[in-house]
Amino acid sequence: MTIAEIAKELDIPESTARYYRDSFIDYVPSVGEGRKKRYRPETVEVLRFIAEGFKRKLTATEIENGLSQMFPRNFDIEQPTAITTAVAQQQSENEIKQYALQLQIALEQMTKTMRVIADQKEEITELRKHVADIEKKQQEQQNYIDAKLEERDRKLTESLRTLQEVKKELAAATVQQKKWWKFWE
Picture 1 (cartoon, rainbow, N blue to C red):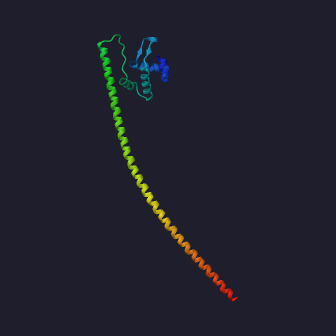
Picture 2 (picture 1 turned 120 degrees about the horizontal axis):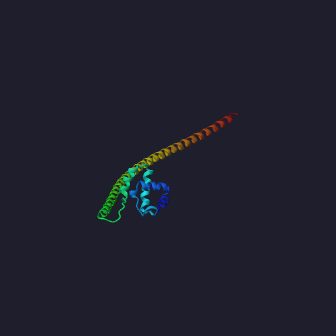
């Protein structure tokens, strides 16, 4: 890939991609020289990592430290030697160590997450018990209110019947009085 193609894929200006490449050249894998220089597909991830670092306001040193942990360093060596073989093995060992460290961190985070989930389940169980208690008390109060309303209605009904009977008796007495007075007229 050309630097222009990489910049387009990352949606950054070509000049910015060149700046990132030049600032961290040891981590940018490439093939060829001059205008024929091309970049490996891994270069996209390296430049993406650098761009993200600058977006998060990291310093160049912090970004380089991150690159050294995440990506192998590039060396221009003409022929493989015992040193290059040792460097390649060391890089492989470093990559394995890095992956092991990342795996350990992921497992620790997963363990913490599982603890949080267990605590939340316990809290949910307690809250459900509390809600059930409140619903039971609410039902008891509703039953008490319903009983009191029934008793009030019964007493009101009895009072109304008593009043109607008294009213009938008064009406009958009033009729009797009128008849008695008419007798003397």
